[in-house]
Length: 439
Ligand code: EPU
Image (cartoon, rainbow, N blue to C red; front, side, top):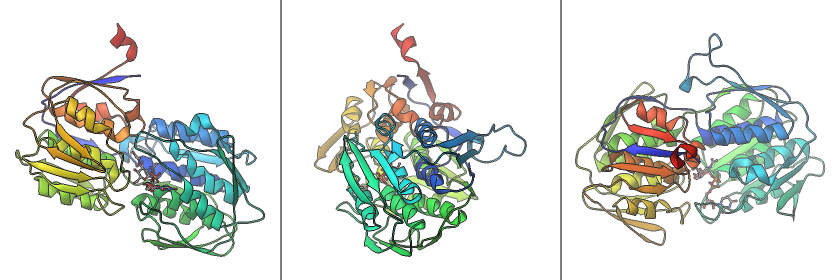
């Protein structure tokens, strides 16, 4: 278990390249299970969650191969990662085992593709996680409406399809609104169902659109993706395709906030600011300015930060995945800010750790009240989940003295080379291996 040691105070200045989206790449990788031919994916980031998904695809009979980025003609695109090739070689395996699912909840994305293509799926039930209860009932309900039958056995969801899935019109929303991976799971399965499926109350996130675009390249017939009503006309089979995953909007937003919290100036390359409109809206109010030129975002900020109110919402609202990082910034605003979490009401594990660094944050139910302070102080803190950890990195970049963040494996799940990217724009950050710390 590595730690980060960060010495605060450096103003970040320079250019960072944004990687491909983790949350797009994971369900897209799962969708390739339905292809009869090889698929080639560009821009898939090198992250431990991607390694877990590749391992799962391997268990499910896929040959997964990453090209060397130095091969001729491939030295373009985000992070210089070589493309991934995925080919199904053995379609008899149908089980996503607990040892992988427990490390990565997105393993649930194989449920729809396996049922549609192989007629059977056994997926370990993802347990609770640091950001709260995360049920998968909407995934199961949607697939049931397409005709799959489910039972639960020894901690697994076991699904079976007699014959072929059948398209229908269904409502997919839940108590907290639409579900991103649930929409993708059911949309994937519906591409191979008989007849038309209409998903009402579908999630509109860019990651849903990206997966639909890949499926369309594979021969699927999908309309309305990116709106709450997605129409899918089932086809008999899907073929190979080549696709580049979209830039990671959450990584981009995190670096925007890193520029803001250090009163720095960053250029963020290979990103899509249209995916961050609610974020730039809030940041503008705080006094953090963004402008775009081609695919590059320029971020700069006022020395004085205004407090704001923010509520997380489904896309195009402010993403829950940037809530913790915005809170780190607002800890230093000039007044009281209010953050309400509507997607995962318990996603506040960062509050206690930020307070250990001198922040003044009080939680009331799903709301956090943040009284701005003049400075944060370095401390030893604990990463608890991916985005909470990113918030601690941001706080550490500006805190007085040195901060040690333990358990950074959480960050490695979703931020590609974060310490290298931050160091390249002036941050004083080093990764310390557990053995070295003990010495
Ligand atoms: N929900 C249900 N039942 C379900 C599914 C979801 O009640 O069957 C609820 C959830 O508990 C939550 C709400 O619906 O209250 C929305 O959850 P959603 O299903 O949209 O979340 P997800 O698809 O499991 C993805 C991202 C998360 C991100 C959320 C919300 C991936 C791999 N994960 O999760 O990303 O927070 O959408 O935008 O794409 C992260 O990257 O750090 C992360 C947690």
